Length: 134
Image (tube, rainbow, N blue to C red; front, top):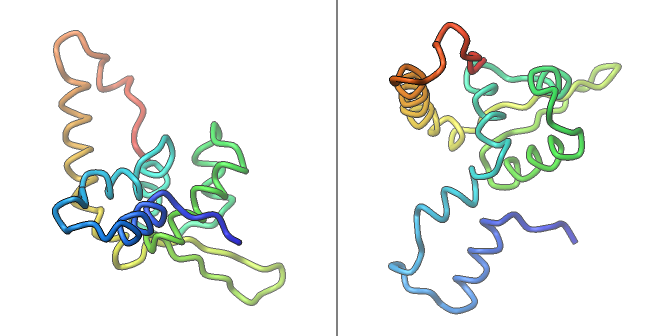
């Protein structure tokens, strides 16, 4: 049996206790689906174009293969990322944002703006030395 994502576990729990709509927390849902150390970074690299697994590995050298695979699978299971297998030799797999995944674009606009403002604060690192998002 496949391991459930955090959001799938939460939804199963809500169903089991017949939770009222007001007990379902949208912030918790967002954190279940997008939270963690790597998911937002993965999504930031998929915003503009589909990427192959190897590209994602090169863009994030600090993530382990196991963790990247796990995070991509969870994002796919939650309907945020689509995995497309191209029938060529050798096989090629692309990852892209689904329609639901595209809805995070405005969130990234806000996060990027906040990050730039934070870097420019008094006593912060010089923006010229700050690492770009992609």
